[in-house]
Image (cartoon, rainbow, N blue to C red; front, side):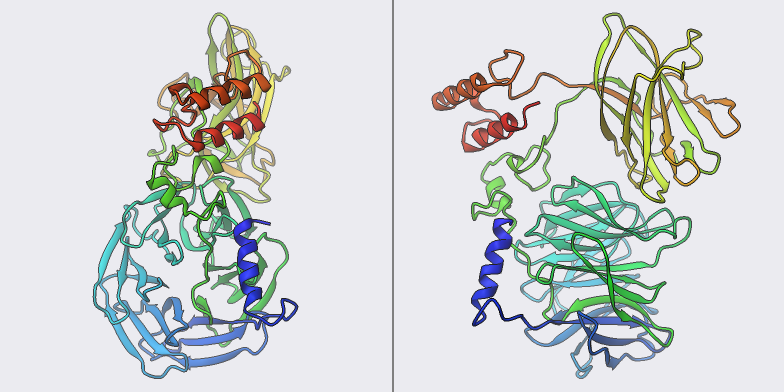
Length: 544
């Protein structure tokens, strides 16, 4: 068990007479929109005791995102009907108040430990005090209509927001902004499980309809819940709430008009709430308030990662997570072929549906040949169906310089694009093959070409590409496509340069570490400390 999660369990048990006594289940509070008839509802998280808490004024019929301050028993929510505003009321609807009037379309509400409200309007993330004073702009995105609902991590003093197809983390004053992920389409809402090291989000657009999950360092992207069908039309995913205490992930869909409860790891679901009378869920919060998060402490030493990085611990990729907790951060790569990626251009080369398109990219290997270790492509998914994804196969030229010899496959890799249509998102996959001098061809295709569809970005340099559809005829393009062929430098754990990794490397590093010289600055931080030792041990265990 994660040490942070274990300590949280022990602390929770300490509050009860016995750990064998089950804790009372909280309620899930739900704001539901309906023209001139919105309301706040509630249900226990296991679906027991569904009920209406209070009705909203007819003019306040479009609540989008809600939060609850358990210490004072008040709701705070955004209403976007007409002129947006932040509203507040007691749990029974009494003592209603307008916290702030806003210009633009407002979304979301999340509280920090001081009770300040975080929300977005159009392309800007804001913070305001619960009494309406201190309105502060924290961050502005660049792509209209893509900023979603924010999520505050009060324990660590961070707020997370999705916009422009990216996920950002920043301090509560907007400073020290980190870009965690650039592969989304429209990130509508965010859920957090800091103790387990994961971030969840609802990605909902005409090309996306899923709940995604990444590690807090932005790696290990996974479509946890695939909401297809829905690709090609707007998605109903509107809110996601991760509750580490119950191990639950709540997903609100305003097309299905329900809220589903999944395990945090994904899998089967229950449906604790279904809206009736033509209402739809548009926000949810627990009766205990914002979910309590663990300390962001990836190495479990009791010191926040943010504090350690500020003190000089290595964070080469500037993602707010210690390098010593990551696998191959800032991995060195030698690009043998780099066509670049013209992500700013809206038109690329179709892959898969509707005509089972394949894309062919030629490249030339010079005298001496290449030892290829990886291949990379860039583009975006459109129809991701069963997530079978794409593959790249390498072929030699057929001798004409104009076509591949597809009877001889030299290498194959499985991979898949991400979803941001505006950003460069190279996706890498292992492909180990030795190529002599000559011309070769990379063929990119969908594994299920009649179900999966994607667009491969044009390259900025390189030879012209070809396409082939179900007709079997080749179509010539004036553009290359976004392809990289990669080798890697020597293994960093080969400390003594012998060509392989063994105990001699460990002994050599320990000797250099004891001397404290520049040779032991393994993580490149500029000085020698225990982070260098941890980084070397990590590399040594991983081998190459």
